[in-house]
Image (cartoon, rainbow, N blue to C red; front, side, top):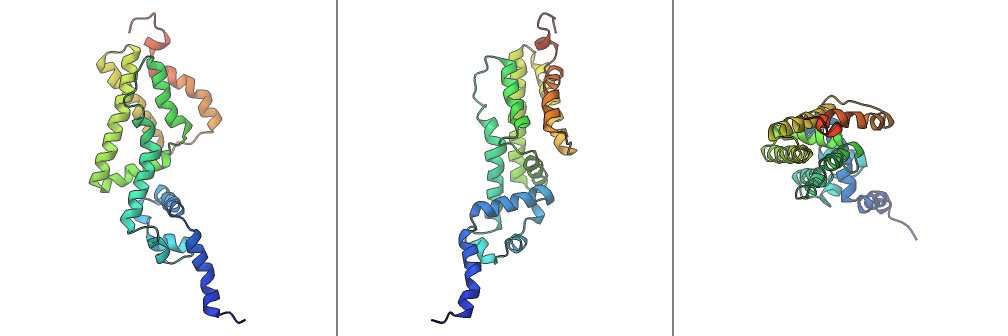
Amino acid sequence: MKTDPQTTRRRPSQARRQTLTRDAWVAAARKVLEKRGIAEVKIDRLAQRFKVTRGSFYFHFSSLKDLHDALIEEWRRNNCAPFEALRGAEITDGFSFFSTIVHVWVDEKPFSPLLDLAIRDWARTSRPLHGEVSDMDDLRLELLQRSFAAMGYDEDESLVRARITYFHQIGQYAIAFKEEPARRRALQPLFGQVLVGPRVIHPDVDG
């Protein structure tokens, strides 16, 4: 029995299209977003990377905007949800609550510094996304401020300590600061002591 040469040539591409999932497209687009920015997330380049046609992309997405929305959803799920989960939490121990917040950043499971920075950069050219990023910044700062208030600091000092903690964290991402995980973990207690201040480290000292 003879095989149609054209059919044979199509089979690898068709198989590739069937096995290439939506998640695979999103993962590839996320890598481009994190390394080069949203302007470089293009259908043709992603298709070339996978060695498939544009049709394979449209098998999973209705448009490039659909892919963009999926990337934003990645950010919401990995970088926003852990903080959203703390929004209504009752704080019985301010330092413990502070540690819970900080560990979201330090553990990076599922939080991604690269994704957070890429989304922040993207938000400079997208008003709706800018609003969403601003809201998330406000929530993270609010959670930190609540933790300091629960430690006994007044409103103003809680706000300032929250800002110092948050700006310190975002600043590390902005300058792409790198450090061995073991070293970072070793220094974490000292960072904590500096950030939470004397009211927690030396509770018998007023202020």
